[in-house]
Image (cartoon, rainbow, N blue to C red):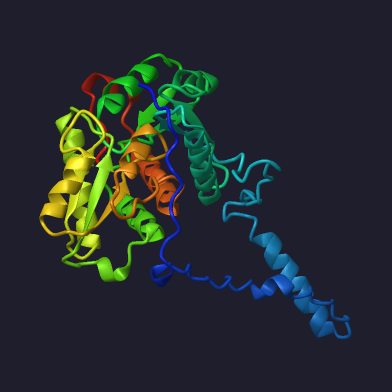
Length: 341
């Protein structure tokens, strides 16, 4: 698979519907953080002295059980200067994000930015990257580097196609010493719709386009011969249509399936839809995303990339996989992945 040309830069959104980011007020600081420690009172009376002695004695007695044995003291563990995880708590499994890979240099930059967002949301979590092809590090190398530890693989893929059902299980089978669980692909999910809506808004989709009889969207996806993958894309299109007030959202594909993006655009134009946006159902820039955007007759949204909803979705899939706890060998033998809900 080759991916030559980088996609064209996105046009600036129209001024009349530029979305203004809401400025969030900082959280109030804990008022106790600024209080000075109370100064010791002078022991100017027998009553004060007895009060101090009684308090100290009560503290010591609280450390003794009724049977006379000493209770364990609850100390705050010392943390590593490079980690927010307590050494007394078992480390969480590493999150291994599995990207496809691309010859477009923007793809690796985008995925790296996305994983930085994940680390910000979950400080202390070991987050790593492995590619199926074209980019380093390749997935087998990432798994080898984890040795005999534990990991949850989260595919940065939007449907259940060949890579999810074949390539990832094969890489897992080659890392026999590593305890692994594999999450389901990212789509379909409402957080994906949130990211798609955000990218459309950035490109120039206005609130007045929601439910407009002249507006429509082509959901441009990579395409797959796997019927399960196509069903997931159709479900995402349905959810996006609901988010946009019921305007038509037509799935279209860059390869392996129909309709193509140009065919979908022509069909919507024939139905009187004059404001047709192209939504980019790709995790990162690449050849397919560029080709789809080039067909747009109105606006074309950027790939999902490092949208904040994408970072939350990665952690959601990671947590789902941990809760389900499916062993790697079952995933490999049955080619069943965790639910996409």
